[in-house]
Length: 342
Image 1 (cartoon, rainbow, N blue to C red):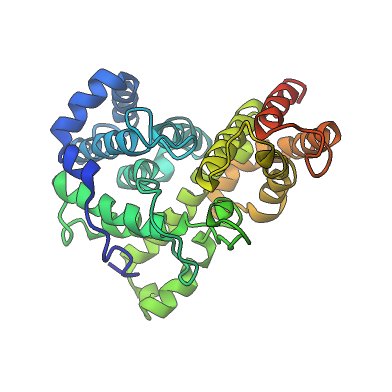
Image 2: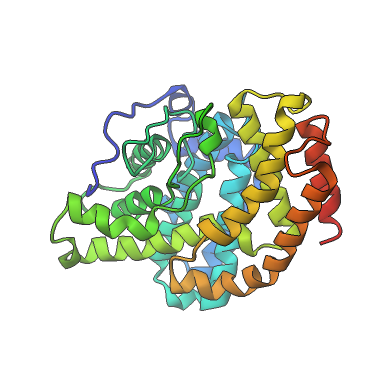
């Protein structure tokens, strides 16, 4: 493709366990039937495009692998990066975007590309951290698997080049500018901004003349929209925004090797759920596309004073350094209780 990201990421045991769409569909029918209902509704919205069948196959294959690898079906559960995150983008956020800008604002193939992004962008979460490249290894490995998913579902890398490119740039653009923490790389899970706005510079280095390629231009536009979908928790009701912060905090502590019932997790949890949330919301998050801004910016603006007040209330309860909390679990419970007031 254009950035050369998908090299060196081999299939794993999960890919081999769910090799194709037939097995995935059977599993989803039994374990997540609401996903089939969602696809049926989306089929109506998109007017029965002939490409929907293979797109649905790819969505189900990606969803089944996500649920088995890092979700509720498997043994390496990640509190945030699991099938629920894929579905919250595929369902609620894309639906909200459709309602805001109109289904006709994008071609059916564009909506399908964004749907594929929703399910495929976080497929891999256990790759080694490497801060020497703009695109993370998790994203590179997720892209490699996503391309193999398309291959398995009837897409052709030459004939369907536009969709492969859209997926490549969208997954690359979902990388955050993760900065090393002094004691544990897992601390960098949410410490940077999205790469999507900086993709033109990456393309300039990798593919001079890309601005003359209509497929790449389209892929870049979709990557900017995809980034807004991925980070649209800033525009969800405060209970949902807070719940996503709790999920990510639990995952972060798990990856850092800290037990939530231990004193050592109190300060990191307090810092993440107060200062960290303010930094993410007010400094790191930016809308990348006019479409995303139209759909999500008004509600983000409404949330702003609530995020500040909630963060301050948490610091007031436990101290700015978490000194008045016995454990991370206590901080999480306190944050959850405060959500009801905002």
